[in-house]
Image 1 (cartoon, rainbow over the protein chains, first blue to last red):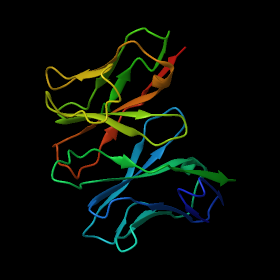
Image 2: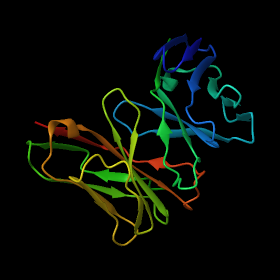
Image 3: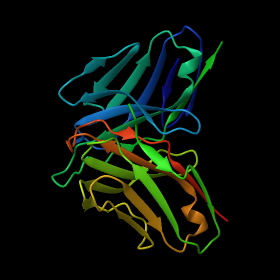
Image 4: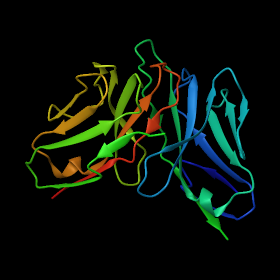
Length: 115
Length: 115
């Protein structure tokens, strides 16, 4: 399944399938990006990050792809599990001489995993 | 190991009351951030500390909001004369070195409800 975070805020996938969550970021000068997972009643949990000098980074079952040309970020989750059900946020930072590292978050995409 | 902790987890205040929200960052972390998360939205930046210095308070919505971190560890976010629009989850995050391109670790948040 595939989702554009800002326009399709809920993604429903079958357990075992791969999930792709998309995010369009706002500032072409951003040079650091993070994906967070947030479960109900909890704070955001770090998943994976990527710097702008990379196009792809892999973690355990997750891959982040960065396309700077179109300012697009995606999170791929392999073999999606029920425990992956949550809201996923992309965040950007690193732009501007006065930047202090504050994160700018996207709207978020809800991932629902059907057993 | 201990993560970021926040207290109280839930706070109900009557309109006009003052509230104080506490954040205990991960021990040794230089940077501390406060974010506000409205229902169904991504977190929004409020303020940033590097050790005890408040280097960015550009996100504080009004002069009713005040934050401090006097000894460079625990931080308190104070909201004076609370209004209904202050109802939100207040998240605290910390990062190790103060690098602008560094993952932030979030606490569970304090859910503030103003009646």
